[in-house]
Amino acid sequence: MEQINIYSGKKAVSRIVTGDTITGLEACLQPYRSVFAIVDRNVAEKCPAAATLMEILKRSKVKVRFIDSSEQTKTLESVMDICAWLLDNNADRDALLLAAGGGITTDMAGFAACIYKRGVRFAYVPTTLLSQVDAAIGGKTGVNFDRYKNILGIIRQPAFTYICPQMLESLPKRDFLSGVAEMLKTFVIEDNGNYQKAADLFFDIQSEFHVEVMMYGKDEESVWKGLLQKHRKSLNQLIAAAARVKAGVVSRDQFEKDERRKLNLGHTFAHAIETLAQKEVLARQDSSIDGLSAEDLHFPDGVTHGEAVAIGMVLAARLADRYYRNDSNETTALEAKISNDLWDCDIPCYCPYSIEELAAIMKKDKKAEGDRIHFVLPRSIGEVETVELTLEDVCILMK
Image (cartoon, rainbow, N blue to C red; front, side, top):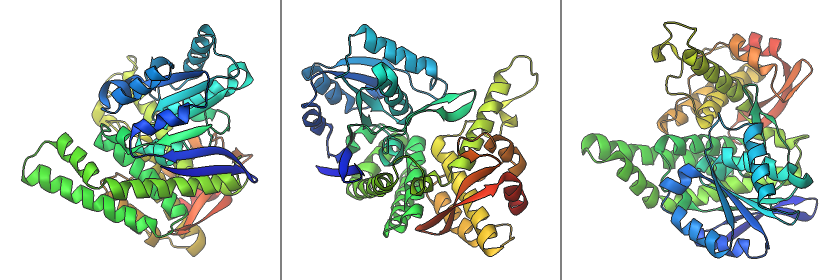
């Protein structure tokens, strides 16, 4: 097992432990006297490694609550339900709350732990690629409010995050690729030679997948699982590399006063995209609106967070080319590089919304300060910069 520390000054305040199998979690739990677990029901039912996870929790005498995690349930009400469950089960200030699931589960459980009895310890077992490379690292917790993403939350570090490739075995292809988008985002921020390695690996995986499925008619799910097992070593190395990048940035700027803002590359656009997509879905469900069909939606199948980040990265690259180089071409050089790599990985990255539609949402972004917003702009692969721009400036540049 490898351990990556997150520091506050010279003191390690959180650790990321990477293990080949879920069995390594048991040693991480041993120091804690009283452990409670929040487990995503979908993970418990579909992930093969979840059976071993539940055996570990049973041996460790951990009380377990299963929850249904989705953007719709990522609310204060769900957090209050977790707190009520802890209270009903006599969890004291010495308790550890363990969250096993994707970023939604870890965000909600972490937030509950931060406010229950003014704060108890918590830890994560992230079960999606997106959460393993991003969401479960760095201490951000939060929930959605009034249709805005993660607008309520606290930054506080988990005791540990246990990252295990076994937990990805049942992850659907689309959800896995959402994590790929976040991984590529991380390497756009800090490369260390990993961006092209990741782009090449996932292009190879996609190529092999299409050959097996399209040419030989094999089952998609079994082919995908087999390819992840085949490339597990390379994948694990890239996950650890992404975790090290984020841990380093967080250690230098835990509370997002300066450098940590870099990690928001693509996210200001992404959160606006997610909000607009969700409003479309809710409008379609509104019985008072006649004649609105799935074909009228820009994202008839919805949009995942990783897909929104991919689109946001492309928009950030376009904005960067126009801001730094006054490049007004329809598709700019850096934008073309990033978008081509995303397409090669089978990640959609076209934005169907106008910059004016996005700006109307972005003005309420939690990163807004007055009439200005911090935008993270990539100057090249491995070099990004945070600049303050008004939304009026952005609309002019992005026309």
